[in-house]
Length: 315
Length: 111
Image 1: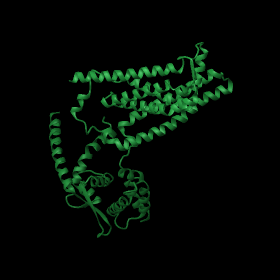
Image 2 (image 1 turned 45 degrees about the horizontal axis):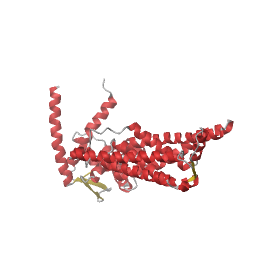
Image 3 (image 1 turned 135 degrees about the horizontal axis):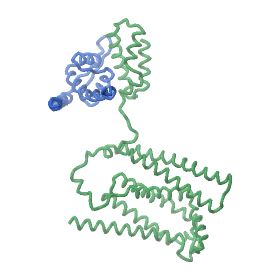
Image 4 (image 1 turned 90 degrees about the vertical axis):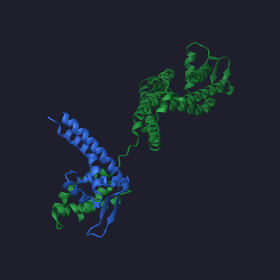
């Protein structure tokens, strides 16, 4: 019967290809049973159409044979949406910062100013769309390969509770979000506009303080790759902290390693004389590096001290 | 007055598990989709064909039913029958069903 075959073809278009042939065969047999039972072997086209209508639209019928698929695991959806929002905010702040710094340099007016304001929005949107694409791919991979560990607590045991230290405060969500936004801004700024360092130095000079040195942007570019890796790891760390809600043991090791690496890189940059065009003092970029070095060393030290204290409490 | 749509959805939810158990119990001898719908309706279990047919395939993929095509009749038909695992599952589901039924009956009587 032509109308039945047309209906089956329409259903087939919407079925999963793997089982399509078998489902169509079965549906044909079931439809013919129904037609015969309702209207006999000599059913006319009108009667057949009635049975088909009762059977449901091709989409409805096919949907019942499909397994529900989620591109991103439900356990990760909130985190995915949050990072998407953080990326949008971070990129907007980054491009606005560039706009403000550049505007303070050459004070644009009229059409040029309008063009630059427009660029803030278009650059934010363009970079955000690209970023969301990459983010989605990462989350699809996470959802496909780790869905079991993300959505279920199958491996959970009551013994795991002993690792939760009630004396330690829960990680601040606002603090983590702020760190992620800040790192996003750094990555975008340093990769797209490394010369922002020179702009910053120029602005600093206008304040009346004398710069003790100036950064050679071409040399600084060589460090950007390493810095981006460290900042990206920093984002990954913060995202995991947000997801877990607490810094568990291995996260603390990860954090300590990251801080040590940042301190090491800051130290290397501090004493890399090729990085500076003249060195007559510490005022300038070196102060930033010293702060980074000290803060990270303090973090490594306090992490180590906390670990020791926990050991003592446990023993 | 009760919301008809909401009540309808809740009834569907209540039925869902019982249909699976009914299919496992009624597939002791091989049966094809259309005959199973009729048998179930005759036994007082209200099931729509569009609900049952995909369910049969799902139970097969879960190893609770097995299927085979019979090409000896006027048209090819796919027959389903319960597997050992399906039989065991039906037994466990049956026990649970009786326990829920007893508890629910008591609850409703108390009310």
